[in-house]
Image (cartoon, rainbow, N blue to C red; front, side, top):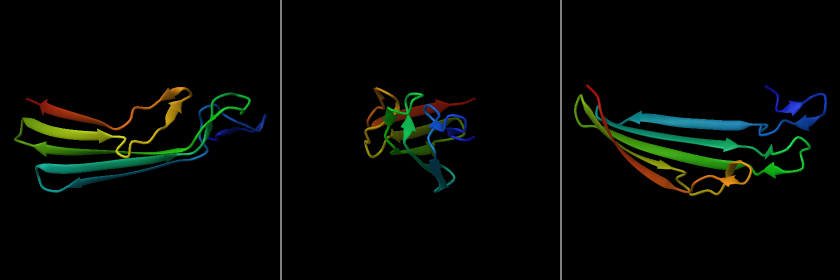
Length: 107
């Protein structure tokens, strides 16, 4: 999909020209798993006239999961690891670094 309207030669609203993503999912042992993901999003425009834009940004998240047994898994996630200030929608800043703990049980 093109991020530019060929008839008006304006960038489409909230469509960056490029998004680069990468992730690593590493099983350290049968019970321990590490996951890291990051993305770089280029500048995007907030309006149809291309006069207001959101800056490009880089964001990274990570997760550690440990399987206690066949039924219980513990995990710890860190979002926005580098505490970057950015917006995905104009005037709605994304949260800074956050840490989430989770216990999952399945039967």
